[in-house]
Length: 261
Image (cartoon, rainbow, N blue to C red; front, top):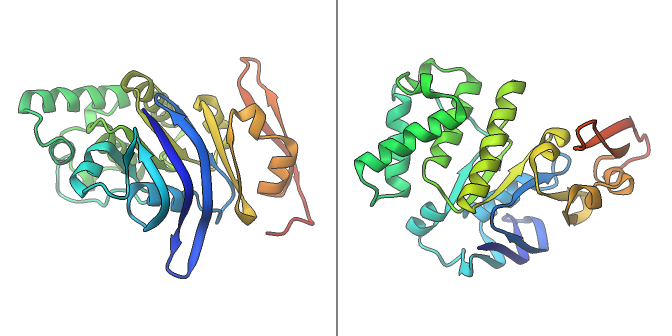
């Protein structure tokens, strides 16, 4: 399975954000960090792939064209987590997860559904939240529940828009480790938009760097995040180095006063 994006045009009625975006096929099992400064279209790209914004071009998942898919088929194949947190309500977390699983996998039996819910809650470390009402949870806890709603459906393509933004460091690591394991074990694809470069690089297989002016590049972090690319994208003097464990780390030295978008 792979994700194909060719000549993609997506945006809003009078303002396309991406125009003629074409990427090399992204193979199954990959975790892709979608990086870039504010306003370059990270969220727009994910919304377009999720079918929430109109797109032109060629989009396919495992040779199935995404634009022609009926809604029920998209719900089976794609799991989208927006930046906005699930709103507090009187539903119990377990009920929300059961409903999400039933919507995405309507043929799944009760026992199999319950097993999925238990497994996802255990993987994310939120078993203790299962019988609590969403209105009682903190923002970070609700963000974890939102991710659980995506994972319990076992989609083939995960589109996660800043899934760690409301989380402390421990839960950030837990979330990305779980998403990486899910992608590899299920041979799914995951695109994760993030502003935390080093956290994304700790877990990602590939980087999609979006820069002002419609520039973009997809590839391994060490090939994409050069000093020149970081300067063009973020307007900073920065470099990519390795930590003591060998993981790539971006070190930003200073902002460039002459940078304009």
